[in-house]
Amino acid sequence: MERIKCLIIGSGPAGYTAAIYAARADLKPVVYTGMEPGGQLTTTTEVDNFPGYPKGVDGPSMMVELQQQAERFGTEVRIGHVTEVNLSKEVGGIHTAVVDGTTTIEAETVIISTGASAKYLGLPSEQRLRGGGVSACAVCDGFFYKGQEVAIVGAGDTAAEEATYLANICTKVTMLVRRDVMRASKAMQHRVNNTENIEVLYNTEVDEVLGEQVVEGLRMVNNVTQEKSEIPITGLFIAIGHQPNTDIFKGQLTMDDAGYLITEGKSTKTNLPGVFASGDVQDKEYRQAVTAAGTGCMAALDAERYLGSLGAH
Ligand code: NDP
Image: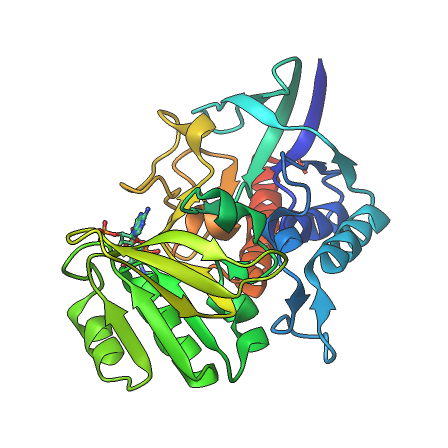
């Protein structure tokens, strides 16, 4: 069976940054890309907030460059989805991972960078217009709707935060809340209610996203009266939460109630020796490419130090 020093699961900014550092530290990392090679950034268009790109960069190109940078130092990038893991509880123990349900690989260290996936409503019109005006990230895409009217779905802290963010850029933000109350903290609700160009519609859900190639409007339904109404918008932001991709680690790694991996203090250490977590899979707070990359770097340094402490590296 193949045995490697460092297995990196996931190929977003966290996974590839971990790979760059691990490869340069001679850990000969192997990255398994997962089902969405390049991660969430491959679903966005322009990335304007990653330092070092004064003119911006499109998400997919940035991920190709990150991959090339990781490969330049000897990272092996393999297309494959890790479907099962058996993580050792022993210091110096060997972890195993099954790829695509068939190949088993052994690793001295594992860096988990499987990310999180934004939840969507699941309406066919919403899915069809993803990338054509439907987005799950206001910080990433809000700028494209400067001076325009947009809507946002959700009532948690993310939705409230994104609504106020969008209100600074857009002329009007309509916020659709499915219940008669918001889940967001009182402070965040206060901010929303005190922002003039945000209109909150309670008991309101999306019935249909309107438009063929791009979003042109929204048909909404009041779930109490069943009354339908339409508004013209060019952007629809879905902020109904994220789902960390941690199913395969359940029962082995410590997670919070929402399934995010818990790391120790300021490190990327999980509850098991030699297993580290970086990026959105352990961060429900910031969720930015640059913060994911930062923790990817930390995970590789933690893995290197762990192997060093064993005298294995
Ligand atoms: P949450 O799970 O807290 O909220 C999701 C929201 O989406 C809820 O209001 C929910 O409605 C709504 N929703 C879910 N499904 C649907 C649907 N199908 N149609 C319409 N609405 C739907 O997720 P968040 O991303 O907002 O937050 C995640 C965590 O991160 C929270 O713990 C939050 O506090 C934290 N956070 C903190 C921030 C801060 O402190 N600055 C900023 C951002 C996040 P309902 O209420 O009816 O269930």
